[in-house]
Image 1 (spheres, rainbow, N blue to C red):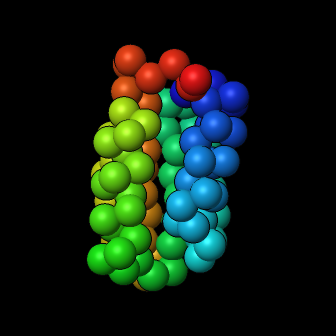
Image 2: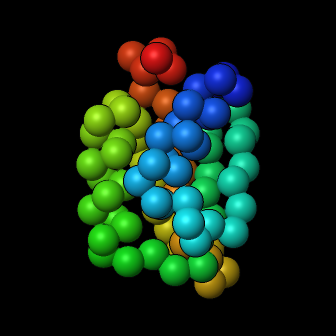
Image 3: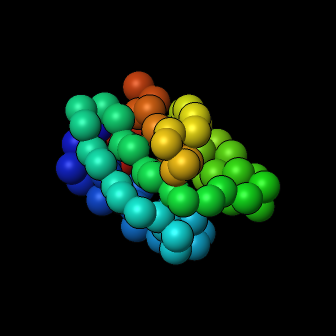
Length: 80
């Protein structure tokens, strides 16, 4: 995932209000990690819709009291 793709994803995530309560965003190779202190069902539903529209995969797991999302770049995603 390129820096431009990350910027595009973060901009679009910002439009959904998913980033309103984040504690950190980390870009590592093809992964984008977004850490949350809390995550509601509404956030989860919004994330599913967002990932479907942007052709992204996600993995979620509890991590020391924070909720972590890992967005995986779909091979067909070109950042447009």
